[in-house]
Structures are given as structure tokens and as C-alpha cells.
Amino acid sequence: MSADGVKPQRGEARVGALVADKYELVALLGAGGSSAVYEARHRKTDGRYALKVLDAPPNSREAERMLREARALAKLAHPNIVRLIDFDEHDGTVFIVEELLRGKTLRGALDEALVLSAREALEWLVPVLRALAYAHGQGIIHRDIKPENIILSEEGGAIVPRLVDFGLVRELSTDTSLTRHNTLLGTPRYMSPEQAWGRLDVDARSDLWSFAAVLYECLAGVAPYDGGSEREVLAAIVSKDPLHLRAAAVPIDEDLADAVMFALERAPEARCPSAVALEQKLASIDAFAGQPWFEALFAAHKLRKSEAARDEPAASRRAQSIAPREPSTNETRAALPGPASRGRWLAVTLTAVTFAAISLAFIGPKRSPTATSDSPVGERHRADAAQRALMAAAPSDAASEPLDAHDFNQPDAAQTNLDDAPTPGADRPLELRAARARTRDAAAERPVYTSRSRDAASHGANAAPIVDEL
Image 1 (cartoon, rainbow, N blue to C red):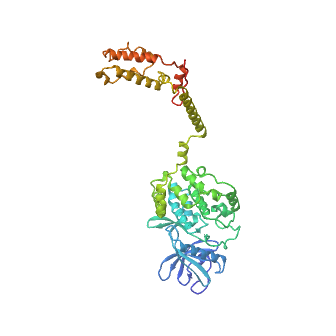
Image 2: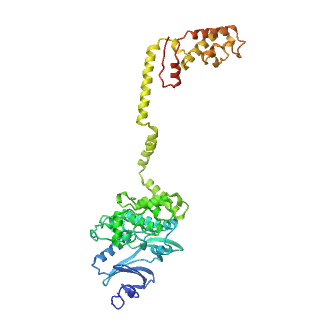
């Protein structure tokens, strides 16, 4: 209302009017279908604010929606969300007062640059993603994420992205009486498929789709669904997958492109599930390590994990620390042999046990078959027997002399020529040489094995011995 009680006109004609006898409208900032936003000056404090005036009566559906916006903003206190100052109705005019942000919208930045670098796009949009994660944690869905509703506020020489215009907000804890079924709310190019269908049960994943569409446009210079009439855009959103970002944009990091496309999945259940999940994916992209926004994002991710670990009950943490660690799928797969491998090992084991039992039954009572030159066991027995004979025949001063293992571990041909081969022990007593001869004669009387026994021994310890006694 003006000072003289005459209701001013809309838009520029309203500039200079006085609202609620204290807010003077200084300049028009923007106008929508049912409201307009002005820069306003408080007459007593001289403070500057953004004042949204409703162009509808106080008992209208639009007035109820503005009240819901004010209630939602009253619950939100985040550095990247516009701050609520006041809400009131005076002399038939409903209005909401918010802090005044100096800067330009993301739409204005895109109009100037057309395409943003990945670094710049993420530096501006990751804070908005954190704001969404915070709002969703409070049970509030924005439902109108678009470049026009992201203000690049100039604060202290820096650009601080701020999310504004909660006019289509939905609170999950309240009913949906203000939204009729099959009613479209939002901007078509940034509507999620479920929102384009006019569904009432949209949740946080709808905001995430809209955010990804904005990020897609920043990187590619065009929205994922663009061109044609609004009806054609909506039909494409609900029926077609968008062109992959790597094909639509200039060369871009593969992990970043995949993260954006994951959030643009048409089916909500196939989509990136939350703003926190998308934030974590962005925090894991090594290509952006070192960037200030990335380091802040990574630090926030680490802080969130530490807070979750701190809030976990101490008893639960102790139980986890003493519980045996379950092997991962890859570890289990590597440690356990496959079905075919287990079957082969079982067959080999059973065969070895069976032949060992047969061998013990047939040759266990016999002593000589074990002392063969063709098997390590036989050589060991023969060496033991020879050493006992030498110890018995050698003088006391020779008994302590270490024996040459070469003398007892060579094949038969080498053993036959022991006396002829030059050895360091050629000057040993005759009794020692006689003991060697007796050992050689005893070995000559052992049973003869065919070459199959050597073949079996060459196949390793798991091969069953094959014995042919003559």
C-alpha cells in the first residue's frame, strides 16, 4: 500500500510505494507469475532488504504458498541459503522480507560466458549442493532448482553462491494439499521426470536431478533437454535419456561426467540417492585435488565421517574391533579354489591315501623294498645303514670325522665307482674301505624297480608309488 492508502500497480509502477508503513520499494529486482521482488529500504533503520510482494489476495492459494515458503526458510540457517527477515500481511498485501544479495544470478553468468570450466562450475555449484543436502536433512524439498534461483552473491570480495526462491517448497512432514495431482510446478527444462509427470510424492532425488541438469548446462553450454516447445521438452524428459555429457561438452573429466549422468537417471531408484552421495562422489575425483573448493569439500566429507564415527555407540565400536574381519569378496574368491579345482585336489588326496594304505599293507613288513636308490626314502635308509656300518668298523679317531654325503646320495653307477674315484679320504684305514664294500654289496641285493618308479617319483609327492618286484 502507498502512503495515501492507494494500492500501487505491479512492476515498475510500484517503485516508490510504502509497504506496511515501513518498507519503501526502491527498485524492481524481478517479477514472476504471482509476485514481484524489490529492493526495499527500512524507513527507520535504513537497512536494505529484498521484499517479495504477492499479487494475490491473502486468502488465495498463492498466499498460503508464500506462508509455507516463509516457514521453510525460518527452519533453514545455512551460509548458502538466503536468510528470512520477516513475513507479514498488511492491508490486503502479503509480503516476505529476505536479506538483500548483491551480485548476479547463475543465469546471468551463463549468458555472459556460455560455458564454464569444470573448476569454475564446481566452485559455484558444490556449495549449492551442500545447501541442498542441509535442506533435505530438514525435510525440505526445493522443487525449483534452476540457474535463475542461484545468486552469485558478492560478499567481502568473494563470490558466495546462495540458493533463493523457496516458493515451490515441499515439506515432507506436511501434506501436499497445495499441489494438485498432474499439476506442473517448476521450470520444464529443469524438472525431474517424476515432477514432469505431475506426481505428488517427489522427494530429495527430484532436487538432485534438477541440480545435475544445471551442472550439465554449465559444463556443456546447453541444458540436457532443450529446444522445442515446453510440451516437447517435457515429453523428452519422461521418455528419453539425455546425451551423455562427455559427448555434449568439451573434453571433460570422465569421473565428473559419470557423476552428473548418474544424477540424471530418469528412474529415481536408479539415480544417485542423495545430495550427500553426490557430494562424496565429487570429493573423490582426483583431477580436482588442490582446488580450494575441492579441499573444502574433502574436509567436510572427512568431518562428516568422523562425526558419524564419534556418534556411534562405544560398545558397538568395541564389538567391531574384536570381531574377526570378514574377508572381502575378492579375498574370498582368491583364497578358495573353484569347484573344479576343489574336485581335483580331493581326487588326488584320496588317491594318495589309498595307495599309501595299499603300500603299507603289502610292503610294510618288508624292510628291503624301502631302501631303494631310486627314491629319496631308499637313499636315506641306505645312508643310515652305511653310516652305522662305518661307525662300527672305523677306529675311534675316525668315527668323529664327518662323512661326505656325496658318497651315499648318488645313483648306483656313481656308487659302483666309489673306490676308483679320487676322494680326500683315500688315506683312510682299510677297515673304512671294507665297510664301504659291505654297504655296496648289501645294496646290490635289494629288489629291482622298473623305470616307472622313477617316473612316479619325478611327478612329486602327490604321485602314488608304482612297485614291480622281480
